[in-house]
Length: 302
Image: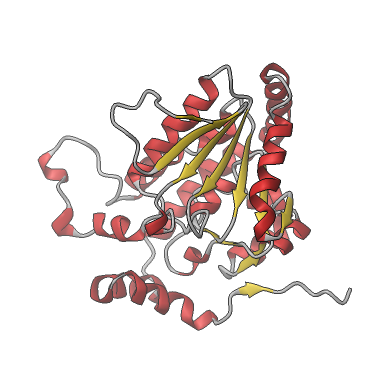
């Protein structure tokens, strides 16, 4: 194993980069925040992905999360804080704010999402290993990967659609088809890893105590193939998805998320009010409480 020294100007704090043979392990490293996606994490992830793609000793990438979760979503505390007028310092700079209008919001998301888009466009294959929660922004990362493996009890979903917006990365239909995509995104319910494997949302699922070895074994098997060959296979499959309109769908998804952010429906307004008065925990309880047990249970008698 080699520790990452890399090209960052300062030591990364939110991402860890390690090399095992020809596999680069990129670990989201904010376990105290359940690996919620902050601006710092996403920029460090960009550097790690580019480092893996640049190095000739690496043939495959394994993306994972430190602690109990893969990634619990976007860091809503900082995100909603940015929308508060007293925190708006845009008038002090000539930089464009990523909020305040439909086009500003679209522009901001396009810039932000261009970083996880690297997972799709880079030449090296990327495997996501999901355990614990993979929610909202966590799915924006995982579903871009070339393969996804999960622990049986992992929870995967986008509950933020209930009050906060729409996935700015839409890979759902390409993994599970229109009906399951709508089932998940019209309710914000989550699906367990073992059932996600049954509907094609993930490649395979194994018991939680086996996921580490299972994911690494798969990554090392993929890494046995020279990059020139694996890159060709990845890009052929990706081109087929592009011919299905995948890239156009991503652009449209970001515009629809911006549209959703302008909404003034009662759930959205209540969430913003709860965030201001009671913080994130109160807001999430208010958003998700009416849905009760949000885990989808597949029928086993058929």
